[in-house]
Image (tube, rainbow, N blue to C red; front, side):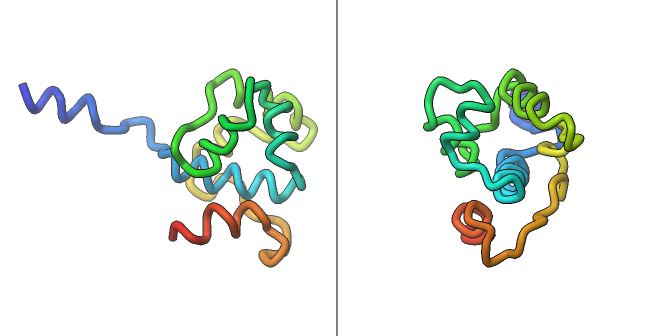
Length: 108
C-alpha cells in the first residue's frame, strides 16, 4: 500500500513550482511587469495568486497560463516555456532584474 502512495506523491510531469517561479521571475523582468500587471494579464482575482507563483508556493492554473501566453503570443511565449528548466532566459541586465533578484537568487 505504501508503494502506491509513494507513486502518487511523485511529480511525473517534470516541472516543479521552483522551475515555474524562476521562469515567471525572468518573464516579468524581461517584460518589465508589475505584480498588478501580471494579475490583470493572467486574469486572477487577486494579486496574492501572483505572489504565490513568485514564491514558488503554487503554480498558475492552465487558464492563467493560457491568458499570459495569449497576451504575449506575438513574442512567441508558450506554456512550455514556463514549465521547462531554463525555459525563459533572463534578457535584462541582472542588476535590473527586480523579480529575479528578489525571489530567485535568494533561494539558490
